[in-house]
Amino acid sequence: MVGVALIGSGRMGSFHGETLARRLPGVRLVAVADPAPGAAEALIRAVGGVAAAYPGGVQAGADPHVDRAAAYEDVELVWADPRVDAVVVAAPARFHADLAVAAARAGKHVFCEKPMALTLEDADRVIDAARAAGVLLRVGFNRRFAPDWAAARRLIDDGQVGTPRLLRSLTRDPGGFDPARIPAGTIFNETLIHDFDTLRFLNPGAEAVEVHAVADALVEPEWRDRGLLDTAVVTVRFSNGAIGTAEACFEASYGYDVRGEVLGDGGMATMGDGRRTSLTFSGANGRLVETARGDQELFADAYIAELASFTTAVATRTAEARTGADGEDGHDAGREERRAADREDGHGAGREERRAADREDGHGAGREERHPAGREERRAAGGGVGNAGFAAVGEDARAALAVALAAAASVRTGKAVEVAK
Ligand SMILES: NC(=O)c1ccc[n+]([C@@H]2O[C@H](COP(=O)([O-])OP(=O)(O)OC[C@H]3O[C@@H](n4cnc5c(N)ncnc54)[C@H](O)[C@@H]3O)[C@@H](O)[C@H]2O)c1
Image (tube, rainbow, N blue to C red; front, side, top):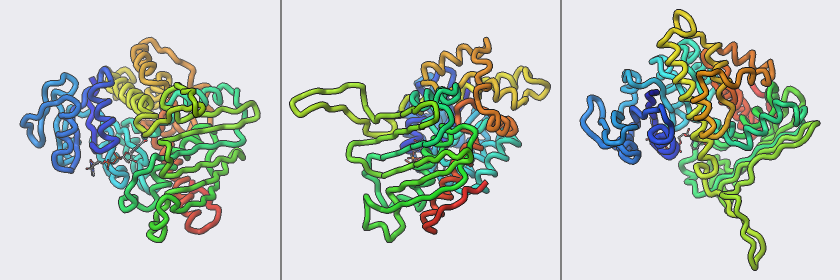
């Protein structure tokens, strides 16, 4: 059983909390931490727990998957809780780096929602802390686990798309946001960062080198003078010559819409159609399709699969550390990460679970051979935060952040900006 603590029980944390409590065999939600009074306890109750006295928090009972979950208002208590093997960080972005560093130092494996950090220095701190502690570090770029995107990447790895020339990734949110609660840079750091990761995911082995961004407040124009950016287009030039565009808008009248495309010399792959179901209704007014209304509707399976992948890797790491299977200290990080990669390639949760069941018999050997050597070597060099199949690790989060920071700088200066190494 893998014991996981959820840190931050808001909108995203609630979905992850339910996944940890109910959707993943072999995983137990052992704690929820949130400084907002009553928030952690409320989530535990919502996923089936019953509150009871517990030192330093509140213990929940009833549901077998959450029967020992503690509600902590002091996040520090998570670090000392021996039942916690791993944490899922879903607090607001500005807290991510410090929380991830503290978790790693306490020896907890880390899954951190995007963005992992807001500066490259903080990103490096997180990567270094995870490496020093020998813990896994994964980041919530869930699109890598969505079937279309994972399938596209497999086509690319198999050589069918050929050398990428043009890439595209876009995000349209359903609107209804409060402009007063949008920190500066959100469109780049929190929204387009998904698209920057996607462009890189679809152009394996290449890195973004130069960015040019145009952005405005077109949804809430009266907030323009206060610095809001709610609509943006970013062009990204890659080290292999490929050109990508990422675009985002905080409001689309028809719901939540994420799409991607890669055109190579061998063919083109397109991802995402924003449809809620595959239903098409034909009637007197023509043909209609229903569109997804929110991220947790469109990407529910991907959000579950990314945590299935993470907790499966934690389970293997924990078991091997216990048996010393990888040597005296049980921490042959490179070998473990390669094994994790053999089990994970961004499939949906069902497949992920089958893979977990297949774990012991070594299926999937050789998958990493299809990954481009350059990136794999860098990942392997990352030791404990290294190669993790299609899952995003610390270095991926840092690379996407570097593009986001360059895009914000490009808007400020009106010029193309080099992406920091
Ligand atoms: N991957 C995705 O598609 C996706 C989608 C939505 C949100 N997110 C990310 O998830 C994170 C949370 O977003 P949200 O929409 O759930 O926000 P939210 O505001 O709904 O929830 C944040 C929660 O964290 C709690 N919190 C505040 N400070 C904390 C601290 N120091 N430690 C622990 N908890 C703390 C708050 O009380 C609140 O309950 C953000 O980083 C966001 O970018 C990712």
